[in-house]
Length: 324
Image (cartoon, rainbow, N blue to C red; front, side, top):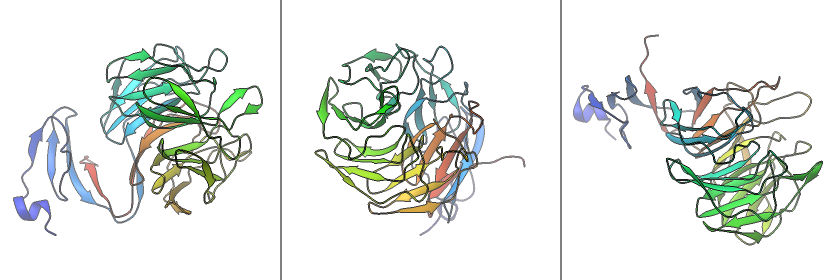
């Protein structure tokens, strides 16, 4: 297969946004972010630094993709901040109507969903984002924090979570864009778990209160057991689909945070290249081969602002040209 330079030569273009599907070898100058970029091949999965959040925070939620992500809420007052990521930098978006943290999210940057969280108590509040502002929608039947969340703005899934002091739940709820209805319960009650997939093909893995390795798969009707994580943990994040997921970060108990990254193929988990920064109570999104993580807390509990981007083995990656 010919590369871009073999076909078009080595000249680069000036564009206001990155090409949606660049060819290996292609080079361009992004006039909006004022950086020179090129498309390179990679043979092994790797994490690289992205732009920092404007506000470092933990216990936030996220949605979207590596080049079009959404971060919202978090445990930094007033708990309502929203930021949008373009693959290079974060900019301010519209604030949540109800500031909160320990919430869950689903959807995309321009069609996002926020549900649950605290304070006060255990919230059932749901809000929808249109790329500019948040509006209220139907409440969940069960107020909860630290739940799993996945799917789209019109077809989302909430499962597990913390519903009272020292009480986790196995309850699952399905959202149709207007209201929530009950789904089948998880096999094991848990909170602070990772999630991936869609409303009818979801994945829940890890979680607490004691760090667990177990995985469950949802088919739209019931949950069944899947392969265990190699590193048991809670407070982790997931990306991708039920048969091509990525699980990363988390809290592993007395030894603190982990940088472990694992890929799921629908049957078992395999270890991938570790992240640079260990963290928990974080957020992310994307796919198994193009994932994103941002915010969270380090092992000392301090809020983080840094972002990391994952590129899977064999996938092409966009790089920024630097002077170093």
